Image (cartoon, rainbow, N blue to C red; front, top):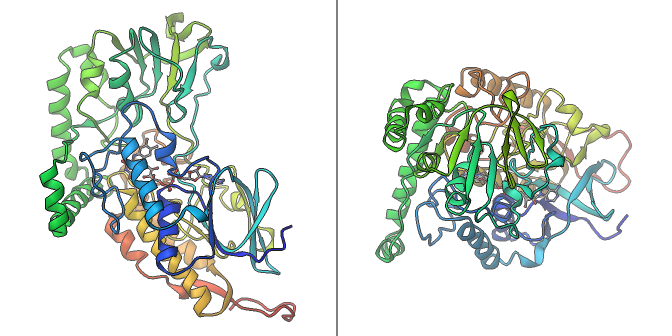
Length: 499
Ligand SMILES: Cc1cc2nc3c(=O)[nH]c(=O)nc-3n(C[C@H](O)[C@H](O)[C@H](O)COP(=O)(O)OP(=O)(O)OC[C@H]3O[C@@H](n4cnc5c(N)ncnc54)[C@H](O)[C@@H]3O)c2cc1C
């Protein structure tokens, strides 16, 4: 094991969360930290998702840090602009020397005696830190369907988050599995080049118009001269998201206007009654992620695109076999099948006080106090943890709250001269009892199959209240909710326990 002194903080993950945390540490004058990432560059989601048409679906005025506005080319800028924004942020805050790529953490173990976390990397190296901020995201592990014969397919195939840049689609027959947030962005793009696209749909999404438009030079000037105008735009977008959220957590009545917008768009863009029927979701709006696109329905209506709703039974070397033993030929398969979302932090194994294993503590589904702290795992803070995903607003807004809370915890460790702090079990329990009760009446537990709920139907992904309430809950680090271990000298009396 390395004998170098431990870092004050190690941040795991260099996406929006990890970079935002690193920028906050710098601003707070904390230099003794490292950011490790298993990838070969920063950016997380925006490094991995390079498919044609990739863009955010929350306007960039809100899908960016409040402390670092961007100069965006349009309301919903493409992936490369968002990635460039993160690179610029890293440069401006001098994060480069703190970043270590190719450093995937496979295990994190708390050494109680020394009050340090030992982080084991994939190559066996061990890094040590007094505190860990885990910013590994929720949408980083591609999910592939368990369809028989998947490996027998003779042509190229890839998941949307692992685009094969070498494989051209011009003139080829492409099979796309899935009609979620990624597929609705790339299908309209690939349909322009491919000879034919079969889109395999398990359930139809609600697709609302995307109020996209370019930002002209004059608009940038206006924002730069009058930052309040930019802030007002940000607030408007936020409030619209809160109205959608009201529909998800309070009453479908709040979704009446979005329902009208959805139906109008569907009827205007698809005239064939058979195809239109296939595009009508069989669940309440919001139970699965609501999507935004102006070109999804027109893409489905193209002569070279077919929406296939028969379930895929197996994959054979030359294509896909659907019900009734119909073989549909394909040269390429693209999996737009989303991500493994419920196994938070996987495949990292995390061991806390008394050898407690995080994934055992989470046998019934992941949970954490404020989505940040888990009892028994001191000085370990998560960003974008359980129940902090959103159906209707910007994750960056949530991340900012979590970053300032984690910073508050790090300051408390220093100020109170503590070895560690650990959320009280009863505090976590009460918080999660509230999360579960609030989730029960939310749209996410209304019975559809979505990526937010466990096999038993419990929401462990989404924040089940208005977004501003989350920021209110995390506005201060609440030390009283934590058990603390005062700093011990090397010869501390055995058995000294937490207060
Ligand atoms: C295509 C797509 C579009 C999206 N659009 C939006 C949107 O419009 N609005 C919105 O609010 N949200 C959107 N999201 C959600 C998005 O994931 C979040 O907004 C945000 O980017 C999450 O940032 P993060 O840093 O928490 O996680 P990520 O961006 O996933 O970054 C996590 C980082 O951790 C690293 N990592 C993971 N495990 C380890 C490990 N064990 N060791 C070391 N490093 C590790 C990864 O390599 C990655 O770089 C989108 C997601 C996808 C996939």
